[in-house]
Image (cartoon, rainbow, N blue to C red; front, side, top):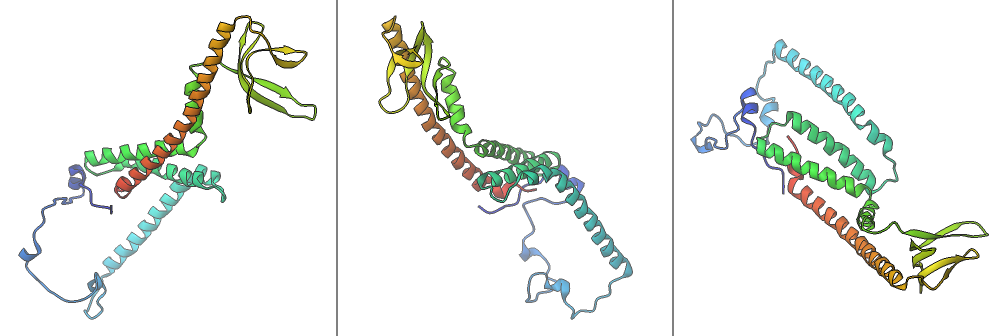
Length: 265
């Protein structure tokens, strides 16, 4: 979808004496002054006609060029301040996160300007601001892909006890963390990690983690069932995190397709 014109705010039209009417006089009803064959705007540079440019006009052109340069310098300084943090964070090897950072900075800058100075009709202005803000929120989530599974995991973990890991230190150096265990009586109930993990009631015997007969098998079974359910929900949470990420990518594509050419003023 290509960029189309947007209705202007009547106050803006009045301020600058503009006519934003969609009903214009038909060409057939206009009185013809001259017709010729040529390129667009070449009549502005037709040397076949004698032209006399006054000193006042030339000075006016010079003044406008100077004002344009001042305007450019003003925005050059402003952009350096606005983009300083972004430029400092960019690295040549950044991939998607570099692109997202640039998009976030520009769209945040754009929406601030649209809110202050936008002159489209109010409904168009509000729509542009809303879609840009949604896009910025999407980019913020997409900037840290690890946050998708982290958020979903946190939702699951909030419903269960804070499980502990079995910590194993090795003589050769290094430490590993495995399993999910909850304190019970003088030991721990839970499930080990890895292939064919042991599960049940554990106690430490001479520094080794060993299965033992539970002092309350009914409660042990209940706690084990809870750990199994926790594992199932964690697995489902990771799968949902992938769905969340895919949906954000699809929504971003939709927003860009439907609004990219409308984000201007």
